[in-house]
Image (cartoon, rainbow, N blue to C red):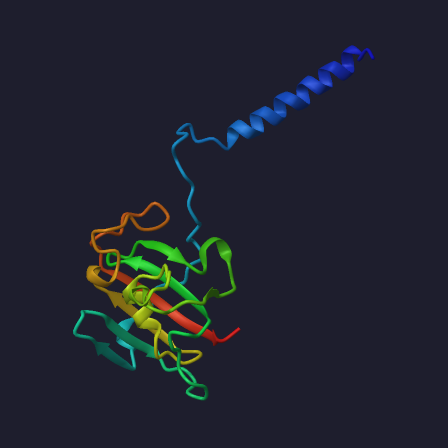
Length: 178
């Protein structure tokens, strides 16, 4: 089958436009990884608005910003929970959020059991401990010392080096159970 000169020209033009469109998305640095978009993350909770504060011996600080409905039992380590959260470094840099890239649904966590009890929880200890005892609708600011976070053992998430950082999570418990 022979293609006319006009069709060949059109096909070459379509091919060129397709290639240029693909190249336009390249930043020139092939090692650059584009992470989540945190532009829709709400501002941090203010501890000035906290109803109460719990400071534990291990350094974990929990500011209860807004109490939840104490109708159902609070979160325990066997519960599946739906949670809105934003994790920041102590200087305020967002490194993780359920609101990333415009999401509006809460994240689901199914395993709050400590790793020491033989389970494979990927949650850092301070985050896990800070969620226990929450009621539906409750808002907390959880401040996690390095010893209950990534310590000096792991690199962290989304390209952030969170080793030896104090981490701050704003959390709102949407629901306990499936």
